[in-house]
Length: 283
Image (cartoon, rainbow, N blue to C red):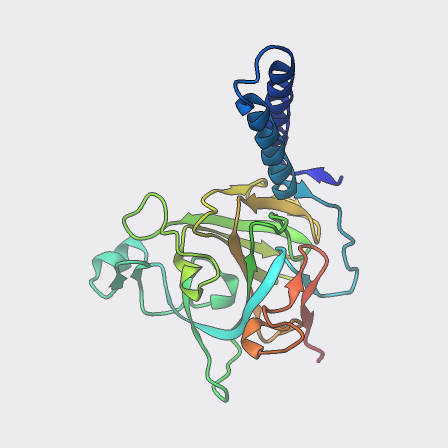
């Protein structure tokens, strides 16, 4: 149902009550040189901002067979073909001394998973040069969500919420918080979610916090059944969401900011649950 997202009612209603009380007090008792009515008006403006931020409109969900819909509202920063070159190490691999360490991104074992398209743990991806494509590549679509966009995130396909994990920078309980419109923000504090459908297709969605957005809120648990376009969480204030899908099974269906398209100078604007990001490869 269209309205406010979970957690949005209190931030909207409380400033309205405070603003109304302030205006009544200012009009009937003492305005304190206009400060109390000014505070009341400020509360109404704050409530309007929160109502806009926590809005959660209904969306028409495409019924096209095999497509992946956008998990977020915002402009497409880039579309990139990538390949896994490392993974988060096990305890034994970490103790082996063969791991690579980075102050920002943490420890990596310099080999991809044996089945990288299962996304069993966080992997390190690098762009694939033209002519060097392989069957284990993925396409990544990165979406920048401004503070004015709807911040409710939706499942890109119908199936199961297969895996979910929270990551922060090395040695940090929270953060880092690089502005979400920068490519380096991919290693900000984030929640990585893997969805699986009935044909054993796995796709990875990463909710990434930004300089302002510092709270990622999942609404579903692992093993929850989801519909295509179903709401599963949100990020508060400006942020970013990345979707990875197997390149052997999908083709991107959007225009990014990197393409310098005059019709989409900031990248194509997409809507969660409605815009089709990937179409299936025809065989």
